[in-house]
Image (cartoon, rainbow, N blue to C red; front, side, top):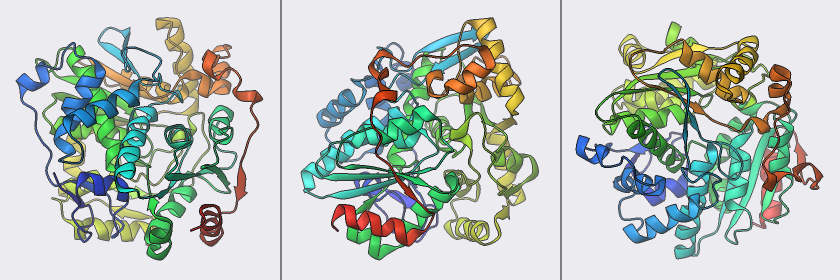
Length: 462
């Protein structure tokens, strides 16, 4: 299994190389040269299996010779051992033909744990074998940062620097990033929004002298291994609801497009997904693009669902690559237009492909709060605001197939939004009850690339 860049001019890599590289040297994102397809019999055989076994069978074709079967199974088992639910990703029924996929039972109470806990194990195994040391730099709108820190904290061959937008994450999200005491963990509060942080991260990867000096690695959803781990729960949910013998629809609250792109890969692998619905909050660039054909950035508006407060959805580049017939030069041209003009227009053929592949919807702040309140009353289910965005859009797209909405975070990560909608202050799980008593370690930074690179060089001794 080999991996190619969406912009067409970076080296072709193995799974291990693509995982450790993150962003391609031509600025593109790595994708598989081809997507392996599972037969109906192989998909049907997943029914009733433990989550870890489903994960092994779904991901195994993508990793090539990087790990033996026994090694890979052991790494998967370690990755999910700390989850707080035996099913790992349980389904709850919200209403007739509508189900909630709970993805918040990991150590940091967000769906990012499914990928990050695994990628932490994969990195540790690969680096332990080679003796290599890497510097992981991540940009986060809230959940990726805490999940990355939890996965890599205390490891001897990794330094972790997480850039998050100062004042634009929830207090629980912030404290999850700033309270770990491990010396290899560094939380950087950056003046600006998530797109500022993500832009700095991409600039660091494109500064090849700096990148090579510190051994830069990325664990944002630009990293293919992150996307791959998220493909698994589409299979586990769908087979629980009758796949491959019937189609299942999915609605995904998304900002950076990684989580729904994982569903797109699951469909390419043969999973009978009917509708694949993009749910956005008021920062609705993905919905606007599908509606108008124009991908145009606007100011990021702070919202009740801050992990979706994004205007530049990195993983959208991956699906554009397929929409444009895997023409890397065409994708590179679009990305240059985005960087220079803040916008690009999707050609008619690729736009038709996107519209045939995805549906979409937008949810206002008022609708988000109303959905949290309504769902609690109707189903006794307390939603985080991101999950509420998903549920609201899913309700507009219910049909003959079972609909699964991805619940991306525990409501206790966003207590103010939940309490404002319901009057209930959601409690953190017992293992995190002292989170607000722990001392914080954080460095405030301006959005200047040179200053951040200098700090990373100083702290790593590179």
